[in-house]
Amino acid sequence: MSFLAPITKTIRGCHGFFRGIKWLKSHPRYFFLLFLPIFLGLLLLFFGWGSLYQYRDEIFSRVLFAKPDSLLGAGLYYVAKAVVFGALVILGLLLYALFINILSSPIYDLVSMAVERELLGEKLPEINLWASLKLMGEELKKVLFILVLSTGILFVPFLNILTPLFAAFFVSWDLYDFPLARRGWSFRQRVAFVFSHGWGVLGLGLWLLIPGLQLFIMPLAVTGGTILAVEDLKKSRKIEQ
Figure 1 (cartoon, rainbow, N blue to C red):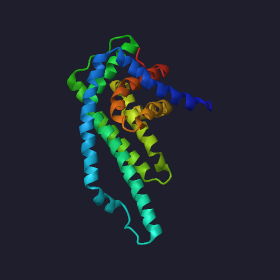
Figure 2 (tube, helix red, strand yellow; figure 1 turned 120 degrees about the vertical axis):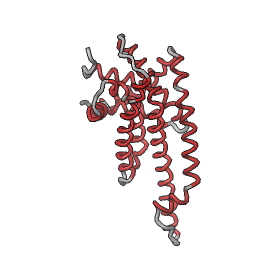
Figure 3 (cartoon, helix red, strand yellow; figure 1 turned 60 degrees about the horizontal axis):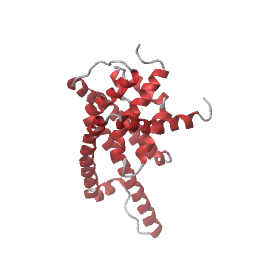
Figure 4 (tube, one colour; figure 1 turned 90 degrees about the vertical axis):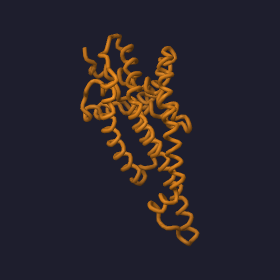
């Protein structure tokens, strides 16, 4: 792998989001369909942030040391409090993104399937509502894996400052994964494939770091994630002939 390969792959992932938006512009009915998860996500996020604010004192008392009396100790206490609060907000956004994707996975999968069908120029097996709902079980496995890994990273010194990048990667993986899950791959196979194309997945996820726009960007990134995944499957010769 050349030195510039990670950069070019990350840029390709970033551009994948715009390619997905372009696809939605030519298929407006799917664009409006994706607004339903956005509405559900707003309700869930406001509820989560409200709970965080309501129980903030109890949370801080459990995870922080007692406030020292000295000036220096008090300063360190407030810095630690700010870091913990920021980490909780970021972790809350990650949890929101993952669990709202479980609830909205049937919608996301239908949109992703329409994108893949057009890209491959062939008819894919039709998926009924019951089969689509089964994807929730696969999503739950992925949520547990990501939750354990991201929580562990959060408590590793120096590595935890990269928490936003890890969160963006994990959420982007969630949107990239639909074509892989449809092929009946095991969870281990899907993890290996995603990490082998990790720079492109990260590039798509960088858009999710824009403050205040995650709610709108995440559902719309389903199409871009599908485009990237299908192209990677073709290059890896994993598309069934």
